[in-house]
Every structure is written in C-alpha cells, then in structure tokens.
Image 1 (cartoon, helix red, strand yellow):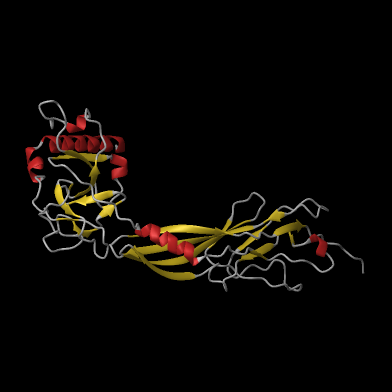
Image 2: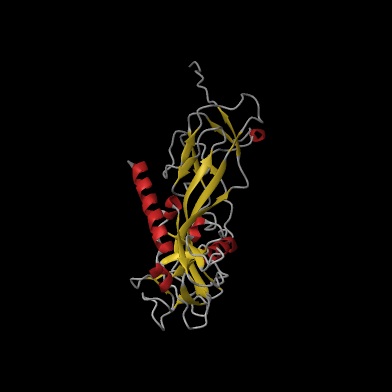
Length: 336
C-alpha cells in the first residue's frame, strides 16, 4: 500500500512539474520587475532588505502574498513569516517555495519547449523544495520550475545561526566527565589499585559540583546581524563497564559513594546509577582489569533572531578512566 502511495505521489509531482514547465501563465508570472534588482525564483529580489535582524536576507517585492511593499523578512503566500533561506535554498514568492537555480545541461528535458529558434534554452529552470516546513521532500524529490528571466542568485548569508550556536558551545568549554566508581583501594592491598567484588552493585557518578561536567548553561551570541540564544543541558550519562557489556545509561549525575568499610556491599545507589559485575578478572593477576569510561550527552536547544530554531546533541567523554580489578569474596567457616 505504501509503495503504491509513493508511486502515485511521484506521478503527481511529475505531472505538476510538466504543467509548470509548459504553462504560459507561469512564465507570465515571472516577468521581470522594474526595481533594477536581480531576479530569483521568477520574482524581483532585493538583497538589501533583511530577514528580521539579519542584514543579508531577501525580500521579493513582486509578491502577491504577505511580502508587501515596506515589509521586512520573507513570507508565505498566506502571509506567514518564514526564514528567508534554508540550506542554500532561498524563499521565492513567485513559487511560494524554497528554490535555487538548477544546474542542468542545455539538453536536459527539464527545459521542455522553452528554447529559441536555434534550440538554445531560454529563461531559467529552478530546483525547488516540495514543502517549506517539512523534510518529506528528501523522500519525494524536487520540483523543477521554469521562469522567463535572467537570474542573479542572491548571496547566501555569511552567518548560519546553527553554526554560530555550535561555536558558542565550543567556546563554553565543557569538561570531560570524571568517571566516579564505587571501587576502593583497600588498606594493605594498595598494589592492587581500585578493587571491587563480583555480584555487588558498584555505584557510578560524575562530579555534579562542576557544572561543566554536569549542568545547564544559557548562551547568547551574535554575528553578521544574527543573534542566537541557546540552552545547553546535560541530559544523560553512560558508563561503559569495560567488560564488553552494554553501557549503563543514567539520567542523573549519579550518587558518590565515599569509602566506608562498614557499609554493606549489597547496598544500592540511591540514584539507581550502578553496575554489577558478574565475572571476575584473572585471579591473581593484578594487571587484569576492567577500564570504565563515561560519556555525557548534552542537549542544545536554540533559536535565532531570523526565526530559525532547532535542537541537537553533543557529547563529552572522560579522559581519565579508572581501571578496576574485580575479585571474588569467599566465605570461610571458622570453628568455634
């Protein structure tokens, strides 16, 4: 059923594309304006008008939609404001889509009958995203639309707000998490290093007192007329126990377990962030150890002054990794 639906949608797209390429109405709608600005998407574009606070946005003054004379920013045909550009595609009021000049050969079938007496193509073919707000166009492809103009493609803005946010996160300088483990260096057995016991829950944590290891940060930055704000939050930490098992994923920084020789080994972590080894290292071999590493996932939620917004994640991984020798406690019966 899904395959048939996709087939039908593709057929509709092909038909619509063919209608646009052959339609004299589409060509008429793309007649050059008289402002002296360059043409894009069949309409007149002025690179001097900004998308809200950006200085390199575009506004198509040939629009019959929301981008009326004197307005700033970019608008859909229904008047809804929209980002002026999307990954190299600029908003075209004529087509009400994100478009760019299609890089196709002169003999490409997309030109249709739009040729002069010598067979050379005339006008411009644009590659346009099917939908302004969805990513479904990645599945179904693009529309190729023709306009009777000589385009001057606007310069893509020099500042990508997401890149600006990513740079701000880098400048924040998040710290590599310290992998805290509930293993101990036992008195009298210092040469064994950190030791723990098979079958006992080993608490796991990272340093929540250091908010660059685990915490929340609000960031702002600006460049090229664009300002951005972002919230960076640690949302999970995973501990790789080093024995081939899947990592333990915790939604908190865990609970530290200070040295207490009288605390029962079977005691569980209050935060639930723990791991229980079910196998020992090589008996009698001090160098046979499990190496534990920690990775914090940070979620970045951002928005920019030109109306764009989004969410992405980044990670930090521990540099200093504790190595643990896991041994076995045996019960010894003593007479009397």
